[in-house]
Every structure is written in C-alpha cells, then in structure tokens.
Amino acid sequence: MLRPPAPSGCLKPMSRAATSLFLLAALLFFFALGGHQLQGSTEARVAGIAMEMHLDDDWVTPRLFGEPFLEKPPLSLWLDAGAMRVFGVSPWAVRLASAVAGLLSVMLLYGMLRRFERPKMIAWTAGILLATMASYWSNVRGVGEDALLALGVTTALLAFYQAQRASTLGNSLLFVVGIAIATLSKGVLGLAMPGVVIFAYLLADNLMDKRLKIADWLRPGFLTLLGLIPLLIWLVILFQHGGAQAVREVLLTNSVGRFSGSFVEAGHYEPFYYYLAKLPEAFLPWNILVYLGLWHFRKHLKANRYLLFFSLWIVAQFIMLTLASSKRTVYLMSMTPAAAVIAAEYAGVLFERLKQYESGNGFVGRIARQRQTLAVGVLTLVIGSYLAAAQWALPHADKKLSFLPLSAEIQSLQTAGHQVALFQANERVGGATVFYTQQVLKGLDTEAQLRNFLAASPSHVVVMAGDSEPAAPLKVLKTMIVGRQPYYFVGY
Image 1 (cartoon, rainbow, N blue to C red):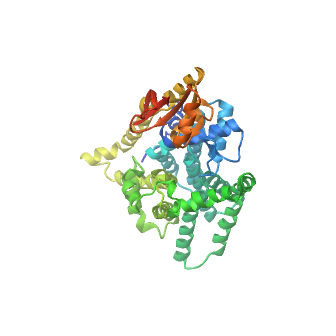
Image 2 (cartoon, rainbow, N blue to C red; image 1 turned 180 degrees about the horizontal axis):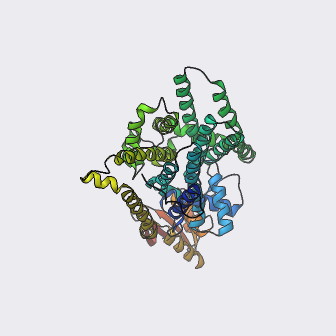
Image 3 (cartoon, rainbow, N blue to C red; image 1 turned 90 degrees about the vertical axis):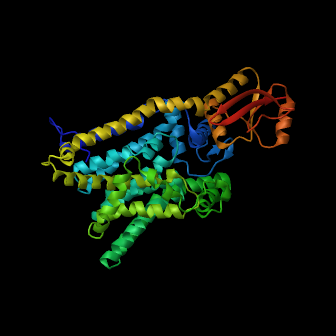
C-alpha cells in the first residue's frame, strides 16, 4: 500500500500525513492550471455563461448568447464569475472553483476516514488514489459544475455515515452543507446522488438488523430539507424574474426530462449498457484495485457496515445512473471517492499478504521486500505523467482545439470596423466567443436573417460552421478550423 512520508521532528504523524497529501493534491490540481485555453464543449459553454453573468451583473438567470440557460443551478457560475472579478478574465480563473472543490474533497475524505477510526495509512492512500484517478484529475482541472457536485455528494455522504456512528451538531451541519452544495450545483441530480446511497444503506442496515429504525430515516430527511433552502431561495427569486416556466425548466425539463428521456433535445442518450462498457476506464489507473476490492469484500459486508456503506455508494449510484436515459462518463465522478476507499482498503489487504513472503528467495519474495518502494515508484510515475500532461500535452492540444485564434480574428475584424455576427452558433462556439471577446455577438438563426444582415452593409461579416464551403452569393473571406470543424468568415 502507498505510504505517506514517515513522521519526523516535532510534527505529529497525522499532521505530517495530511500536509503531504494536501501538497501532492494541490500540485496535481493547480500545477499549470491556466497553461492551456478552453477545450471541449463543457469548458467553452460554462465559461461563456459565467462571462455573461459577469458582464450583465445578473446573478439570478444564467444566460448563454443572451438567452436564459437553465440546465443547472448557478453555484459554479457564481464562483466562476466571482473569480473573474477578483483575479481577472483567464482560463485559470474559471477553473479555480473546480480545482478547489477537488482539493477539498480529497482532504475531507482523508479527515473523515480518520474520524471513522481508519489507520492513517489507509486514509492517506484513499486520498492520493482519489487525486490520481484520471477522470477525477481531468474533471477537477476543468470548467464546470461536476467537481462541485462531487464535493457536495462526498460531504453529505461522509457526514451521514459519521452521524450513524455518532450523531452530533457538527455532523448535521456538514450534511446540510453537502446537500446545499450538491443541489445548487446540479439540481435534482444533486439530491438523487446522495439520496439513493442513503436509502440503499438504511434499507440494508434495517434488513440486516431485522428492525425498522425510524430515527435513522427521519434525521437525514429533515436535514435534507434544511440543505434545500439555498436552492429554494434561488428558485423563488428565479420565479420572480422568469416566471413558472423558468422554474419548470430547471426542475422538470432539465432534471426529470433528462432522466426519463422526455427531454429529447438534451442529447447524451445512450443504451442501458453504456456504463458497463465504460467500467474498464472508470477509475483508471486503479481499476483493478477497485473491482477486486469489491469482489474480495463482498463476504464481509454484513459484518462490516463501513465496507457495506462504501460498496453501496458505488453500486447504488451506478444502478441509478444506468437507469437514466441521459448518460455521460462525467456522471461517474461522484462515485470516485468511494472507489478510492475500496481500492485503498484492498491495497492494505495485499500489503499484509505480501508480508508473508518477505523471507522468500524467489521473485515474489523480492517483490514483498520492495513493496513500499514499488508502490512509491508507481505513484511517482502516475503523478509525473499527470504533471507532464498539464505542462506539455494540454497546451499542445490548443493548436487544434482552442477557440482563441477564432475569437482573436473576430476582434481583429471589429477593430477594423466590421460588425461580426454568428450564424446558428452552437454552445461551444457561442460560449467561447463570449468568453474571449468579453461581449455577446449578434446571433443569426435563419437564412433570411443571414441575408438581411450581410445585405445591410458591406462591412458586415458572419461566422458560420459547415462541412463544406458556403455557396455563392456568400463570399468566404477566411477559413479557420477548430478540432475537425471548419468555420467560415463570410460576407457579400
């Protein structure tokens, strides 16, 4: 198992372990965080919405390209827009909230495992395994609400389990904060992700003990209502600004509709086996430890409620996500803290088994004697790979994926006296241009609007995407490619 550095001097063992974990996680999450431009549709969209919030000073109704965008509550947007006001406009600023959320999740997992009376070594290993899961690492370094959702879900569930062991005011407040963060980040999904685990655990616990524990059900229910208050306050204010339709869009269209499949425009609809096909990559590079751990501990679940809780955390959320019509691999992010715990516990089992072979002369004996060195070597290799990706690979990808050159061309045309509009802009190009130009460009939706805009003045230019070059009478002034998508600057 991966061991924290040995204590030395006047530092206590736990504080030294916590400090080393904090520094490593901070290095992983913040190193070269602003070293590359916005990449992918999510970063461009969310950064653009946050920029419009920053420009319009409207902190109630998120907007993209001037239109209300109510897919999710605005916690991540508030933080991103606030970061831009404090630190200036940059990719680093809009990624800051996610990186901080990831760091808090890692340290919270470590601290709560210690409160669960798990060995320092296990808690430290779980924390570093979480920080070095590839999907988790990439998501906490990106713009979006998923790192905040994972933080909220992790906070609520760890506080819930601690309350099962010893109910205190502190645990209750922590649970309320977790629910508030999760629901303000992702709405109904932020309620469902911890809720399904709590339901599964209480059901299993009551069935195993063969008695109904009413208080255990009522307490999280009451605290959940308290945690929903911040979301409800925002919904009330949103109702005052946008009416019932705006609230309905947040709670029904973009939540229930996505789960049931009735909101067809949302996309991301995949077959029921989608997540099964994604399992081999879900918790890289520690997949084997997670899956073997779940299998190994299956016979211990009835006697060990700690292992039962973290196993159900993974299984219950996986089943719920599988039943949903809208599926994305990023939704698995809230399962990663539990996966890190199972992997760390199983790593501990493997280390104990290897002790039996320390005296051997064969290959296994040599492995057993050098197990800690090997573990540190593997961890160093993994961390080094991530830092190399942050320093070189991601910036290199800007050459093909960044919208910055396209946005710079738009600004250059504006400086030269041209009025630039976007034709049928998707969320990616719309969000990216708002972020980089710090203005909302005119949007054209129909062919008639396109013709009228270009005919109004010879200085008017339209940016449009297409698989082939626009035909006459449109005149292509310049072509730029982002990813594999050509964008044409056209005029008359």
